[in-house]
Image (cartoon, rainbow, N blue to C red; front, top):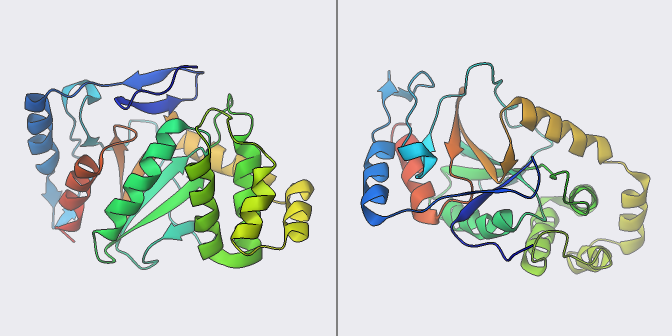
Length: 252
């Protein structure tokens, strides 16, 4: 497979195909203005108002499509980066072998850190069917969290994304090494992974995401109170993602 070009944004579930976009400066500016003009009803963002731009060539916030269920609200077993009590959560369905998720991971961390606790990120595993190593990597991350807590989970995810080039390039032998680096007992880690303790959690995440409209990774949804806003564009640049989040945060 060719090295992913930075203008490609989404790894899709239908196979090794990619959605791509090109953003001329004039279109970017127009899209930014449209995205920033989200309407609010009674001071709260309304899912009845869909905001889109030129054929999804630019970032947008949309109401869920007809027939699409909401994704589950943030739960106690979710992995949260940042302030757990943040009023806005950016839920990201991610695949550790998706090269666009690798790019987006650093973007998410940068953006979350810029909101002073008002926005947190939530990662949910969504291994794509053609990435054969992602499922085990996702289970491994869950084992790390169960054995050594949330900080270890996020450090483990950092190591995976910083090491893999995507598309099943990570050597599985690295996983126990990563676990040890984040303070997890390797024997306990190996036992947890081999038991398949978290296999069902990964499958449930895929099923819930699919019902909620996830078709590729990374797929993001903003949750503010009882409202949910799917974010179009896949691995958006930080500036574009912040533009969308700003429209929600400023009206809290």
